[in-house]
Image (cartoon, rainbow, N blue to C red; front, side):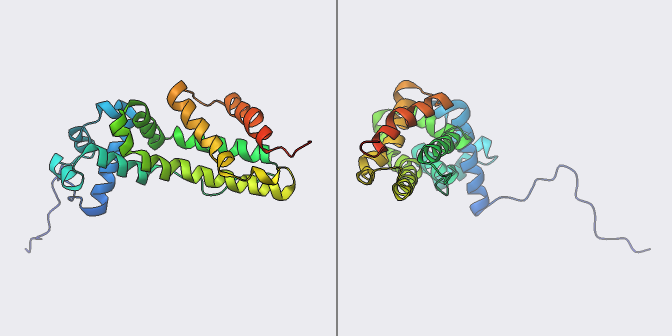
Length: 207
């Protein structure tokens, strides 16, 4: 009788070791999870390693500090609004865009970003200025610009409203009120910002 050389793997066998991009993604996801639950001050490299089911050395080989790790986690994890809304009116377009930005800021990566914004000291915050500008502020400014230019083409918006001060108004206001006033940006707040700030800035002269 010939016996088979193949035997079933014993239960509890460790899963294959993760490497490269798979392990890095697990570490970045664990960093976002830590930020959204325990905040910036509570995040530790040890906690991230535990959350990613890897060793602390594997984290430090890739990121020498938690600032570097968090910056990469935010850049890779924050969702984007891919297209400016086009609903036929500048008011509805701006409101929809604001709601989409709010949704990003209250996603898990957005909650992680808010913990950084609220808890970092001034020196630490400077490390994340590029992340906040590149991942949130600048994309939002570009989408606001698209909405306003389209409004000009429809005759809803005066031509000289297409300038950097106006484009900056929504992301600047949302970031300021979130940081300084702990604003949750409910629908009433967003409508107030659009109706009381943006539409008077955009309205054609004499309208």
